[in-house]
Amino acid sequence: MKVLLKQTVGIDVAQNELVVSLGKMDEQINIEVYDYKVFPNTKKGFSSLVSWVNKQTSTTTEVRYVMEATGVYHESLAYYLCSIQKQVSIVLPNKISNYARTLDIKTITDKSASQAIARFGLERKLEVWLPPLKIFNDLRQLCREREQLVQERTMLKNQLHAERTSATSSKNSVQRTKKRIALIDLQEKEIREEIAILIKEDQTLVEKMKMVSSIPGIGNLTAVTIIAETNGFELIKNKRQLVSYAGLDVREKISGTSVKSKPRISKRGNRNLRKVMHFPALAAIRTDERFRDIFLRLVSKHGIKMKAIVAIQRKLLELTFILWKNNSYYKSEHQYQIIPFQEVTE
Picture 1: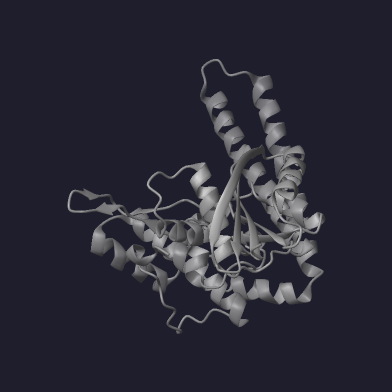
Picture 2 (picture 1 turned 120 degrees about the vertical axis):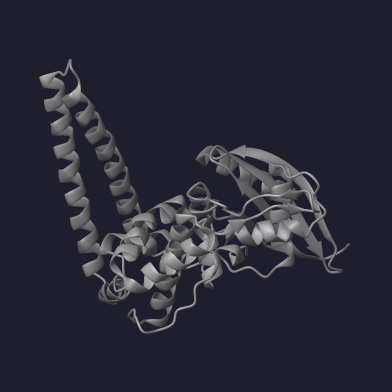
């Protein structure tokens, strides 16, 4: 009987379901992906998943659960597995997609994606995922709650403007809308205060936040959001991974001489992180000569303003990573390398 070296559970996570494939590697380095099943992305589904895996795998070799960092949909499952002492590895999406290209997969489906994840876990040496520090988790929840309030307030303000300009405007309706906006203002203020209190409790984090906020265009709330959404850059090993995690990497399809699509950002990543970089990029272009020069140079090159703004977003995001890792403040005279739009593909 062959000795098993590794066993993996490859999980393709979606909002409502978990597509799961099992894989194993024996002592002769033979790899086999041998079973497949779909479970609901709920606590009941998590329990069913673990029970199924226990029945289908050997008890003599540890089983590693491997999944992509897909926004927020993977988080509940990852926390559940850690709570019952299961080994978990969370991989950035770009690593899986790049690996999948090396396989002979003609049709990409949820099943083939989970199979690729299972094989990836067998072939690569992965780090064991641990839940983030509580402070990062708390900050992330507060930042996301605040963002929801801001979106709701914007909607109400637009509604208020429409009501005021309407020929049949209702005074009572206008008053109620104003009260709702005032309540949101109060709640957002409370969240800001909670964020400030959390940060003050950790002196190291206070200093780190000052470093990140020294970047032009990056304010305190933006810095907090970046750090919270990346768990202090826990899974990030380099700038390209960070760009991919935010979904600001570029995807371009080229096939022969007849098929060539325009390069576009993938948007396959953390949308909260991607969204928070837009206004800081505009602020940096408006207030800092260095970023303004980069913006104008890129626009003069290809004539597309949004493309240049996205490049500035990437630049700012990369700088937060560099300063955080190096424990340093931003220096305008320092030459920080920018990754061109066409090169962000990994």
